[in-house]
Image 1: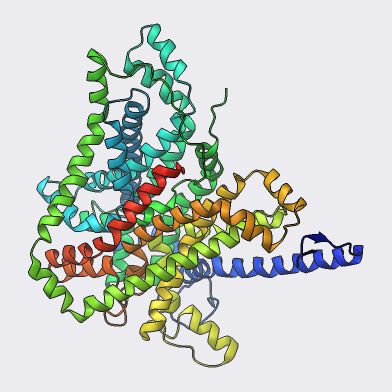
Image 2 (image 1 turned 90 degrees about the vertical axis):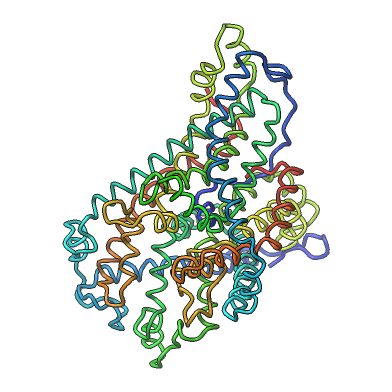
Length: 296
Length: 305
């Protein structure tokens, strides 16, 4: 659709431009349609199974004959034995997410403050260690970590999951904080020094408040990482009391005769908090990471 | 860690760090050193307890050379290794290339393309296990959604996706692309937004538009982000567990396993943790050069991760 040939602008009629615009518009529409179908099909399947009133999902239907919210009722009222502790497990997932978020923010911000603002000697070693951890796939450490958690006495403990995920979330936190911290003028620290502030006061009163956008971005990241994690939850947690929703959900997969509509209804409820967070914070997260300057 | 990709912010080229004078001059003194040490202790402790120790422990678990003899004589392992290579090579490259093209599409100023982005991001926003299980249900048996659709449209029975090994491998790769393409598209959108408009204006005056603009202007400017993203995605995908575990779980038989699910099965279903660790260790000859290359690129170009 190029209007130019060999670097010389061709003068074309307004009609040509109009037709060309319509053609581009039509092509975009087709592409848009393909993108919607592509993105939504598995989600549609999930909703369709959840709305089916029969436990047997493989009815060969493209739309459930008698859509009902029955499975959602079962999940919410914990009316099935896999789901007997559903709200407790939901609470566990929240606990893991919030603790992971808190620890990641504290550990990450302290480390990046020291490396970036205090210029600790050999601080580069710390950032290199973080970068290394960041690129290691978590699944490769799963087997040794599983053993080590037993050595630490954290079998079947939510803390085993929290600490594992903090390990993989902190490197990212250190990166973002170091990058973002460069936009905070060093003069602020200097003047606080002259006024007699100690490093902790500078960290707490100056650094943290100015880092707020980065803290929100990384906090959301850590919370979602913990909420969505499956492998470590599955390995570390085994009793209904200690399970998070991810593990409880996977229980359904142990049997071929599970009520898949209950499973999918649970999955949809489980997926709502991350969905809300993503769309609520997406703009803020992107802005926090790319702004490159501090306002106000 | 594949789920790290989940929310890992946005990459964009940025100026290499300026040299600035820290208020503590070159060397920390007295009580400041104590503060600094106290501040890094939490991270150092986490790193020692949950990275260094497990890595050493893992190396120790996989130290026995006979484990590798056992692995290489296991036909399941050889299939797994081939699957992993295919999964990574095709999955990552197709996802990256399409994400690069689509990021251009999503730069469009029209309102409906922008609202389309919201829908396009759904796969990325949902937990991996949830969406991959939904895909599994689409494919499993002849009564899943996909075969039902094929029957509605053509009147013929569709293929058994999880019985044919090549269809199952394809399903894993397509599912991976489906889940992660939106994320990389966001990364490229952010990178494109960092390109100043003047460059395009200048290119326009010089007569470059349409595909020429893409080949001669956009691609060279995004080349670095593209390369680093591809390297990062490759390393992460080598250890991807969720896709294969939930979409096919190795079916049919164990013909579609990848390294992460193979190691998991050996360790936790068959009771050979050392063999599981050894299997993952065989990814190191590919992974270590990639990690070194990646770290060099990141350091050299100062690209913001």
